[in-house]
Length: 124
Image 1 (spheres, rainbow, N blue to C red):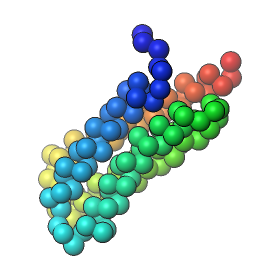
Image 2 (tube, one colour):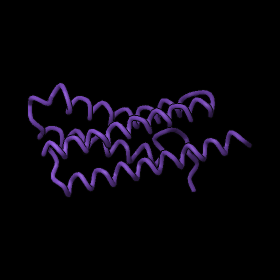
Image 3 (cartoon, helix red, strand yellow):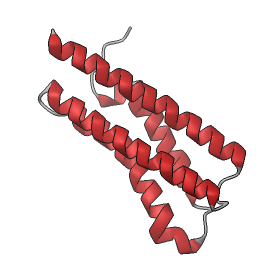
C-alpha cells in the first residue's frame, strides 16, 4: 500500500471531489429560481466535504484532523438532505437520486473509517 503524502492521496478526498463535480453538473439543470437556494446550498455543502478533509489533513495534530473529518461528515449529511429535497421537488429522477444517495453513503463509510483510523493512530 502506498503511503499517504497529503490529502490528495486519500481515496475519500478523491471520491468526494468527484461528488462535487456531479453536484455542479446536475444542479445546472435545476430551475433558475433555485440558484440562490437549493443550487447554492447543495454546491456549498458538496465542496465542504473535500475542503474539510484537506484542511484537517493540513493541521498539526491528529485531533484537529478528526475534528475536520467530523465537519465533513456533517456537510455530507446536509448534502444528503438536499438531495432528498431536490428529489421530492422533482429536480432529480428516482434513479439518479438513488445513485447519489449510494454515493453519499459510500463517502460516509469512508469518512467513518478515516476517523476510526485517526483515532487508532492517536491512541498509539
